[in-house]
Image (cartoon, rainbow, N blue to C red; front, side, top):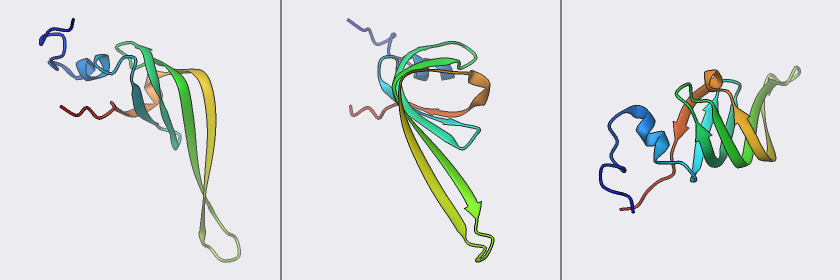
Length: 97
């Protein structure tokens, strides 16, 4: 049984610790977003995610009309290792008290 101290957020990585075995959202430097179940992490934000949906957004300019063309590509991956130096944002799942 989890005590109140186990669920307390005292430093930033505690928020990540509370999201273990839950789905999280990760934004990476390369216009890539990940949604998956957090299995493990370390102090560098290297992470192992499972049941991952990878969303890659690319923006191109049409040569004739100069309009922006936004393309969104989605992939699913069973397991993924995310290197921490590419992580911009980590968002835990919402908890309803």
